[in-house]
Every structure is written in structure tokens, then in C-alpha cells.
Length: 513
Length: 97
Image (cartoon, rainbow over all chains, first blue to last red; front, side, top):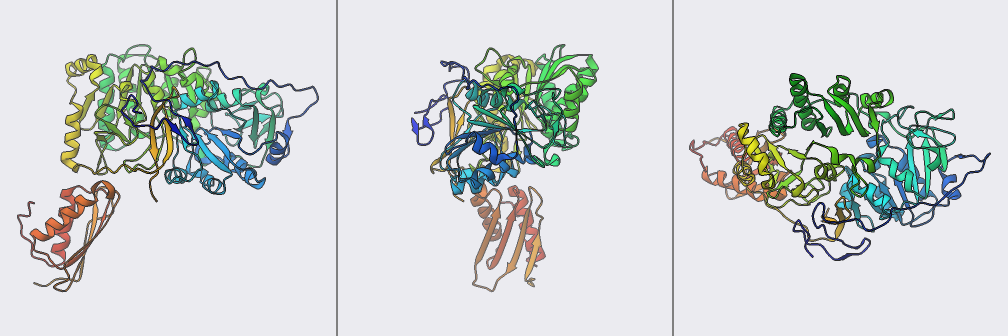
């Protein structure tokens, strides 16, 4: 069958099940009750602190075929996933599903667990490093499910991703399982991506290297949902968890793109009181924030909130009074951690609150503007952030599709050429975010506006912005670089790309080594 | 014409190409070896540019090693011509392919 973005999909996929095709960003309605985890009790005098992970495995007990979940706020400094899976391997477990919200190079030991059959499947929102390459080569027994951040919350809350045991990497906890992310040696800030796991898993384990006196404060994940606490020597490497300061790009081309993007936001009439904004932590995306900041200062505008992955730059804007609130699902640097701990206007929210399309309202719906990147974009404005143009997995949606769907104005910023490769193509290798949710593409060669947004086109023309048809931008790229040859793999399906509503927007096929 | 045995041009910076030429005895023909970060998309185009440039310049017996970091056609041509000049080939100046 062919879905609404023109992708050919099988009706059924072994190791995954029946495929429900993507049918439009808001076309699929929920038709299920919310998930309900087991009811528990804890008698007075009982304790939660266990000696080691092995005791957790035997006590629950964790059996073959179960789904273990993890959050990714420790990024490339995470030690918990590898520790837990090493324990599973030692105990001879097989056929586990790992539901880890994002995978980083530090998680390379997963590859051996795929090979030995300890882990049979991966369920995630973003993959970088050697695990991505291993999946592209078809290593795990079952296809990988690539979700969005909001879609993962939806899958957990609505019952498509049942978690047997959630392991929460806990920067600080107490003996009764209260958890926060703002103290201890591995402080990472918001724990938002772990909230659905903690709320809906059958068992929840806090893995920590920092026990505080009961009761811990503040509390991000409460004792009422945590079954056991395990203290180990070290749960992560702070150097891989948070960076010092996130820097704005100095690349002149990226600065030009960022400046154009900021002018586009202004021309769209959004630089007014109450502005809400999401930017990524990437250089160009953050540079847009710096140009917007200048405009806000000059005009005395006060925004309502900044959303998403939070950097020190956004914290400065909060403290300067340019935004009234920060809504934080993930902190990227030490300033974000400090601000979350100290500032009551810096809110910690869960992945469902942030972006789940199937609840009574998520925060991306309140966004005026989001700035996003792209690996490829096609002439229908569909964006690929999952695979490189060689078809090998190198990323994932994360919150890309969610923010694009929610925001009134979705801007993609990208160099027209990356190395020699045009980012503008007839058909992206892997559709991640549908073109109907993308409004504007800003490149160093000009701005293209989605034909669905003629209102914006008129505003941009009036403002004198360098507007071009998207086909013309593509022609410019090909005049410079030549027309690239594309080679689509016909190999087995190694991953399905799930849109935030649970439908399948594309598939990824095996690429030979 | 005096030719050196080996000549280089270019760098391994992004968007550049490193060309190494090694002059071969008459009758050896052109042997071209390419490594590229965009092999799948532009491998054939890079080979075509190198072959066309060598043929136009009448360079017949040569080994070319090209390590490409995403160079555009004009860069590939310029680096190849520079390497050829360094190897001692007398170039036609109107190399506009």
C-alpha cells in the first residue's frame, strides 16, 4: 500500500505486525483507552534499596522477552543502559526489547547484545553512532521502531509500548525512590523523557550513585511509582552528560541562514508580546535565537515561553526577562540544570505534556514558531532526519515531527549544499516529518515557502525577503554540485519510522556493509 | 618534456580533493583510483571529470589517486591540472571542458 506521503509500505511486517499507513498529520484519531499499569502496595517497614542490579533482576523477576526502558538525559555520558544489559547478559536472558528514548555512541555494547540475542529489538526516537550503523546492516532480530518524542509518550500512555521494567538513571534519589535530576554528580536537569516510563511501567527502578536523606527535594519522579532503588558507584560520566556552554555558530553561511530565518519570523508578524519559540541546540538553530533576541530587545517585546531542549542561551533570555517561562523536557548544559533547580519559572515537564498528540493538549500546540534542521528536504517539503542520503541511519525525529506539527510557523534552516550534497531533492530518502507540517525552508540561497502558506509568501514578499520557488532552489543546488545519483536499497526492512500518531510514515531498508 | 615521478595537489579539507599523480611508462594507459565521501552520489561524475580533463590535456599514461572530500567539479579540475603542472606536463591553458 502507499501512504499519504507516497511511500510504498507492506501491509504486515514480521517482528513488527500490521502496518497502519500514515494518512495525514491530523487524520488518525485515537480509539483506545489509556494504559493502566499494575496496582501496587508497600507495607510500613518494607525497604526499597537493593544491593545491586542482579538482585533487581531476580526479585521482579525479569524474564526472556521482556521490554526494558531507559531515558536518554545522560546522552553520551550514560552508564545505566550498559550496566543493566551487561547484567541481563550475565544472567543469560534473551530476546529483550530495549526501549531507550535516544541511543548514543556510548551505547555501542548494544551491538554485542544484538549478536548474542540478549536484545532482539530496539524502540527509540533517535540513534547516533555505531548502533545506528549496526541497525542499518540488519543486526537486531526484529525491526527497530523509530518514534518521535511525543509519539513514544503516546505509545506508552496508549498501550502500544508496554514497559515491563523502567530503569531510571537517577542523579539524586532517596531510600524511598523519590528522584530528581538537579543534584548529585550526574545532574542532568529535566527528567521529562522518563516521566511516561515511570508512570506506566509495571516496575520502576531508580539506579543512582547519589542517595540523599528522605525526603528528597525537589521531587521529579515520586516514590509512589518507584519499586526499587539500586546504588552503584557511578551511573554516568558528567563530561558526556552536560556541556559547559553551548556556543552559537561562527560559520558565516549558517549565520546568514539564521539571520534570514529571524527576518522571516519578523515578517510573519510573530515578534509580538507573548511569542513562544522552540529552537534546537544546534549552532544555526541557536543563532536564530540570538537574532530574535536582538529584535525582542529593540522592540521591547516579552515572549511567553521557550520550549524543548534547553540551553544556557535560553536561560539568559529568561533571566533577562525576554521570556516569562521556560518549558523544559531536556537540558543541554550546566546553565539549564542550574536554572531548573533555582527558578520557579523554569518548568520541568514530561514527554507527554511536551508532545503527545493523544492527550487533552500538549505544549507544542501552543508554539508560535519552531526552528528545525534537516538532512534532506524534498520539493513537497517532506523532511528526512533519519537517514543520510546513502540510506544509513544517522538520527531520528526526536521532537522534530512533534514541534513541526504543533507550531504555527515551522521553519527548516539548512545549508543548500552540505559538502557536495544538495539537501533539496525530488524525494527524500526517508520521510520523517511530513511536508504539510513544514511552512518555510531557509537556505543561504533564499527562502522557499510551502504553497499551503500563501499568506506567508505575501508577507515575505512585502518584507523584501529573497523568496524563491523550492524547485528553483533545487535547480541552483544542482547547477553548483551536479545531479546526485540516488541508489535505493532493496534489502530487508530494518526499521519502521512511526509518525507521532502511531501510523507508519516510512521504512528503512538494510544497507550492505 | 621532463616529468617528475609523483606530484600532489589539494588537501583533505572538507569540499576539497587531494590528487596524487604518478607518471607511468608509455602504453600503461590511465589508471584512476577514487575515494570519496560522496562515492555513491558522485563517484561516476568525479571519474568522468578526471578522465575528460586528462584526455583534453593529452595525458595518456598516468596513475591518478583522488581522495575526495566533496569537492565541486571546478575544484576537481583545478587540483588535477595543478598536480599535472607540478608533474611537469605542459598544459593547454584553455581547459574549459
